Amino acid sequence: MPDFLAADGFRRAAETIRAGGLVAVPTETVYGLAADATNAEACARIYAAKGRPRFNPLISHVADTEAARLHGLFDARALALADAFWPGPLTLVVPRRPGSPVCDLVTAGLDSIALRVPDSPVMQALSREAGCPLAAPSANRSGRISPTTAQAVDEDLGERVAVILDTGPTRVGVESTIVALLEDEARLLRPGGTAREDLERVLGAPLADPTARDTDTPAGPGMLKSHYAPRARVRLEARDIDPGEAFLGFGPVPEEIARKACAARTLSETYNVEEAAARLFSDLRTLDATGAASIAVAPVPKTGLGEAINDRLTRAAAERTGAGARAD
Ligand code: TXA
Ligand code: MG
Image (cartoon, rainbow, N blue to C red; front, side):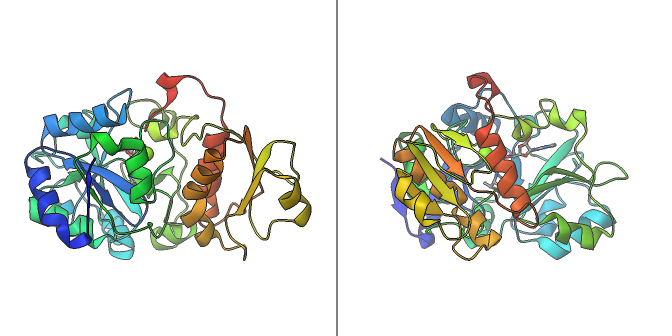
């Protein structure tokens, strides 16, 4: 069993990181499974613990923009986005700085690097205390739903991680938005906790879609169709309920559905997409744990954080194409 440490217990976590071990750390989005990004053996342990089938690139988490610039090349656009949204749920993919000590396993041998300054005092402190950038995917087994609580990490990875830092449920609830700044056009590789509309306002230009190259391995495993998968089947845009189904609503759950569903929850009573994002993964876990064969999910608007919610739901509902297709 791992130790659940209070947030101020990070010193022991820092020692674990320096020794090449794994620590589960809360960020504002989801809990991450962190290792020293400059230590290839430590990073290999991340893949082993998650059962991640391939070496897909990982995000390097640092304490501030200055630390990020040691590892990546920031143009004016990158600096504007960092200024506006860091610390926060935004990952920037920029050209890798030659000589950066981040290991090739983290960048999957690409000449770009994904960098993020999370709005998480614990993770910032851990990065500073351990003296290294932290490579961290979500702290779940490959193909499972990302954890938004320490309990969820423990259920998925308990025996495979030495330390879990517990600061309660995460605030944002969906992973960071990923923007690539490698060409003239900025590309949205993954919708997430920073809304597209806010990014486009700062860039003064629309974000382009990912190219086929971005969605091919190794650069875009997060884009694989079957991902964030509960055990139950997921049925989208549901306005009614079939026998034996659980229901995940947006807004108050209609009385008739509450009566017929074997379990029912709502992402937000008040149609608030931020609240819905924060609850999405834990509600999916809860409904999945009821053993229902299928989860019917009400329509969720596609604007603001709704874009990320719909992205994760679409992946949860996608045909399961076998273990090899599940990425992180
Ligand atoms: O909110 C988050 O981003 C969480 C927390 C823990 O920070 N992390 C997370 O990591 O979601 P992960 O490993 O589940 O997703 C990282 C994504 C992958 O889809 C990967 O393909 C992409 O980042 N990525 C990493 N480096 C890249 C690169 N150089 N080019 C393109 N995509 C990259
Ligand atoms: Mg993940």
